[in-house]
Length: 328
Image (tube, rainbow, N blue to C red; front, side):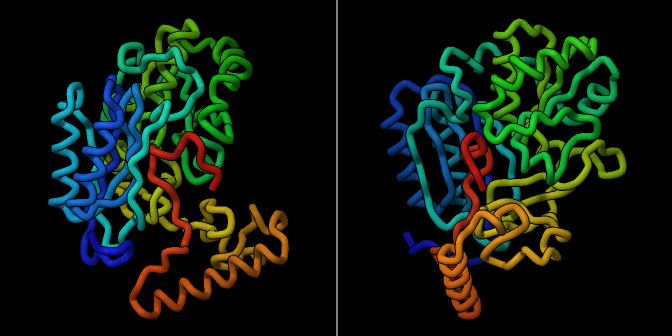
């Protein structure tokens, strides 16, 4: 396999997950690692007893072969994948790891493969969330909601998906009771967090729970912009940073100091220094840290001028694969 950063040309990006029991996780990890290396595929895949989750990118043939390996696994024949393409390699490294959960909620007794709520197709989502008897909840983290959200959605403003159970048991449940809503509709980037969240709400005694099939990415790919109830852009955990309708790359970039998304307005701030800091982290970094970030940015720019990718440039992690724990 070529060293990281040397792949050229168009890249196929595949975001995937599925809740299905995996017994021999070590064997699955090794099989996926071999398939990715053989196909020059990079990104992150997480393997847990509850299923598989990740985002990978590489040549189309390599990505397709990895997906064939996954679909041949028991319970994964109906694996749903969201595709995108990019001219720039979205991942510099390959990680295939065994985890306790494929998306960390800290609720070990949940079984999303059997307990999840009702899938709602992208084309049916508008009617559901426009109904005044539906409470719409964003299951993503606070910085993701700042980039974009569905009109009228409740923002828990959690720092991590692990915080969602505590939020619901406190504020969320009270909000549901006060609103008089007859059902809950939840969404996330690619579908994994909201699917697991529906299993949690059902375990908490909420019967009418729905979630957006394929997540925001499927919605933005399927629903025309003129008909859309989405406002803003959707943060993604790769070098695209954010996407809009049709999955076109958005206008947000990444602060390399704190790895948080930065809007065009944020880049106009006096606190923004490319590769170093932004409004969110300007006052939390000392002089030594800033100097280190500035030197890293200088090396990145030198590598860029030579048509190479600097491996020290900290890119975001895989989309759903790291959404549960990431502090960009």
